Image: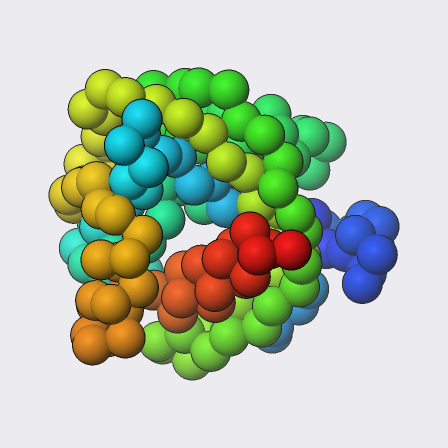
Length: 170
């Protein structure tokens, strides 16, 4: 049973919960999202495994997940990048924010999300239990495709990408 760290609005830990319970009850919990770019400024996307219990087969950012109780968020981001995409790279914290979004299967994401950016140039060696496919895509092309076909992308990625792009403008 995978556990997540419950937090308050200032990202102070308040306890733990089973990941599924946190999503069923919309409990605010700590998460992270990793955006990895290549030297052409393209973002590496992953298409979630078709066997995922929510949002299967949808395109999303390079990697995202939750730190385990007692695990630092940056450490967890490196761990999951390796577990999902088969590589690691330097990650820089960009910003944190809270978002809430309804998922399929009656689940809700209610996350205090820490967003990291990395640079990597080689093809990943994806874990097929986590990732169905991957691709590099330019940001303008990505935004245009999300505007035309939002159903192809995870709801949290659409929210986080919008926040990411607004942070770049500041």
